[in-house]
Each structure stands twice: as structure tokens, then as C-alpha cells.
Length: 231
Image (cartoon, rainbow, N blue to C red; front, side, top):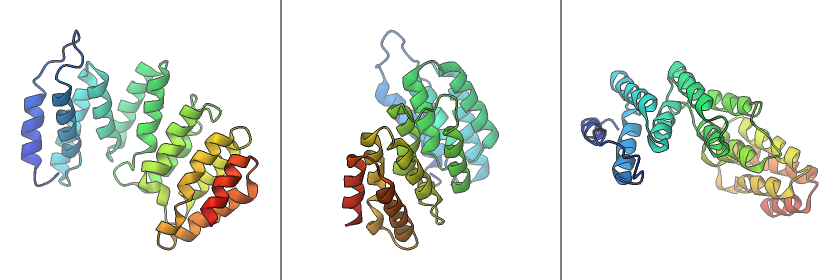
């Protein structure tokens, strides 16, 4: 991101000039993908001034976006930064616009639960916990619940907190959902099956939570997955 900053910027600015054709929305889709890839790198520069410039470009694109690809890509770049005020403003605006669209609400949850918020792992876990209390979160709706918990376990480095808090949170929710949905609890539990791949203290902490899940499992689906994971 640092060494190729000028190239990323020049490419982004060039591709940003291509207008969006509402009558043919798939036209220039490859150019949009490359443009947004460049934008994401511009927002990751380690130089504060250059990173801020990238975030300003992302926020401008977010506000002016005429399609979901550009809007969501710029939102993702903003959410994955450490700029709290810009992040909160963009998320609030996005949610207000799309809160009645089920598939977009799922994306709204997922972009937050998979983000490390500029490598602030404590903040990432706090955000996931807050999402579990969101007005549209419902553990009984698998797609919404998984957009928070599965995304967190699959893609967020904060899941592997050195104190085991990420593993504990997932285990708590696995046991909660197992009361009424063994398929979902078993699917989530698979994230704890990989404990042998990690060094200490992560492997012991993950195994501890898997053992707790195994002891508290109610459904046969979860019992089977947990049992296999402990072998």
C-alpha cells in the first residue's frame, strides 16, 4: 500500500471518471472492481496524511455512489479504518438508507463483524457484542445471526484474542442457538474444531471452549461436531 501509493491513486482517479450506466448496470463492472481495490489500499497507507486522503476519497465516493458496489466498497474501506467518527457517520447513513432491505442489513452486519477496525481488536469484540443487541439482530434468523457470529469467527483476527474472549463469545452463542437450531450450532462449532492448528495459549483456550460446548450440547448435530473436534 505504501510503495505503490502513487500507482493506486492514479489508477483510482482514472477509473473514477468512468460514469455509471444505470441502463446497463453490469457495464464496466471490472473497472469498478479495480477502482475499489485501489481505494482499499489507499485507505491502508501507514502514512497518516496519505491514509486520511484515501479515507476522504472513500467517504466522498460513499456519499455520491450510484450503485451498491461503489457504496459498499467505500463503506468497507471506512469501516476497516481507525477513523471512528467517519465510520460511525457512514454506518448510520447506510443503515438509515437500507434498514428495510433484508439482504443489505446482512451486509451491514457482516462488514462490521469481520472488521478489525484499524487493528483495534478490543474495539472489534465490543462492536460484535453491540451488534448482538442491535434492533435487527435475531439469533433465531440464521442469516442474520451468522452474518455477525460466523463472519466474526471466520474473518476477524479479534476472534483469536489472547485471553480467549472471542472463543468464549462464540461458545456462548453456540449453546444458545443449540436450544432450537442444531444445524446452525453445529456449523458454528466447526470454527472451534481447528484448535490443534494453533500455538499456545490459543489452542488450549479454544479447546476449553469446545469442551464446554460438548458438555452442554443438546442436539445430536452439535454433539457429533464437538465430539469429532475433540478427537
